[in-house]
Image (cartoon, rainbow, N blue to C red):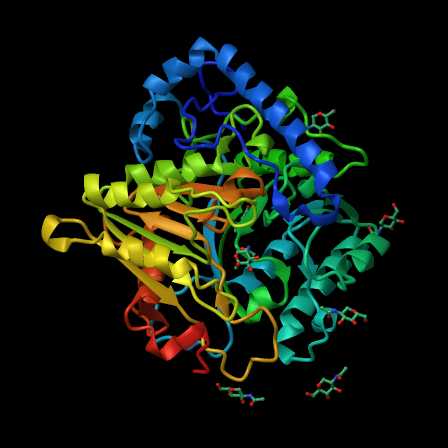
Length: 504
Ligand SMILES: *[C@@H]1O[C@H](CO)[C@@H](O)[C@H](O)[C@H]1NC(C)=O
Ligand SMILES: *[C@@H]1O[C@H](CO)[C@@H](O)[C@H](O)[C@H]1NC(C)=O
Ligand SMILES: *[C@@H]1O[C@H](CO)[C@@H](O)[C@H](O)[C@H]1NC(C)=O
Ligand SMILES: *[C@@H]1O[C@H](CO)[C@@H](O)[C@H](O)[C@H]1NC(C)=O
Ligand SMILES: *[C@@H]1O[C@H](CO)[C@@H](O)[C@H](O)[C@H]1NC(C)=O
Ligand SMILES: *[C@@H]1O[C@H](CO)[C@@H](O)[C@H](O)[C@H]1NC(C)=O
Ligand SMILES: *[C@@H]1O[C@H](CO)[C@@H](O)[C@H](O)[C@H]1NC(C)=O
């Protein structure tokens, strides 16, 4: 019932390696004290990856390439639909977003469901189990020594989780062993009530952090998006995510990614050379889920990073992003917190123009109108600006090349006492064909060492108006709202946000 009726139950393997994917990765330099040991581990890890790569090359089943030749572009739901019947799930997709307080928009602006409401509603629907993949937790103001009424929603969320545990709903949390908010007591409080918590030592395993943010509820519903388990994500940081209800096939697929973290969080866990078969995904870029979401023909799949955490059949997050970019024919709008065509954490730093090239190629070869909206805040590294200006300089409307770059600045208002807030933390992309919602900043490390997930979804436009608005159209409206707001500032006119600090 939950499997796509394909030629076989064999998981499919996306054949295409990411162009420009580094074949060898020097040990990462951010490791400090444990650098030598970890460097050795990284080298071992490399060996494993190289070995897996070799395995993948020698054992590539013929089915892979037949599949590849039959690959349908995203959006050809009807073509896929002829192969097999749509799913029987009654999936429903809802976009959710949060706004920093005091960030008014023009009356009547489009908006998604408030994230806090969406999260509480999702928890209300939980009957049996909640699995949370998280970077770190900080749901109370006292965690960071802040007394501000805007922490109340986060505190309510923590309370709700405590109530669910008291009702015997099980809670399993996979979180990064190296993370901010060391003072948070959230996980101790929940563990005392029976929650199972595993700290995943990603730094030792892959050289990154566990940066994924998603929930799987009752193996039926999922949330994924940019928001951390942090009260500021609900009231002081701008976030975007998606909730999919009543969708066991997609929920069970995302659960497999949760399970990769779960087993790596067990004591003495090591990165497997190849993931056991039961971690394989049969829902991916080449063979997405297809079914009716509230009656609307929909294709969807989840990607994951880093490659070491992609079992057989799982599309790599970078490949998902590149595929969405190369499928675009009209527009490609990107909203990300950070944009660097380089590594950010690995030393020595490397130039990594994979996404930058893909944006330029879309604008040049496909005549796509490219817009990039990047966050600018107190902690923005100013070395991002030459890269942004370079991309902007590529624009040449008279030659039919259209690229626009802006920065999004959340005014501080009277909230300057709240650290690490007042920023757009969203990570998404939208084209006329697909919505991509991710958890990763756009720089190399997020795709090569740090864990993240992406959701690629396409919905068919209704044949008759009025009909439900396809998700990519909903996301385009949210992007355009932000792009045309006065918080989005062109690179030449950054006057209100000198140093990206705008009192507002
Ligand atoms: C964490 O707690 C310690 C001791 O209570 C305190 O000194 C420190 O400032 C706290 N850190 C943060 C980020 O709140
Ligand atoms: C937090 O602030 C409120 C009023 O702004 C005050 O009544 C309360 O005592 C403060 N709480 C703490 C723990 O300082
Ligand atoms: C939860 O489980 C415990 C132990 O199985 C049981 O004693 C208790 O009644 C259950 N509580 C609820 C609300 O179901
Ligand atoms: C999910 O399915 C249940 C049972 O069919 C239904 O009551 C509920 O409204 C559905 N939820 C959503 C958000 O569609
Ligand atoms: C696969 O099976 C192993 C052993 O039974 C189990 O520990 C693991 O959680 C399973 N993985 C998934 C994704 O179900
Ligand atoms: C903060 O500013 C908002 C409007 O921007 C205002 O409504 C609110 O009262 C102010 N709060 C304080 C404590 O000054
Ligand atoms: C993304 O980049 C910002 C700015 O460097 C950093 O603070 C943040 O931790 C990174 N990861 C997240 C949370 O997206």
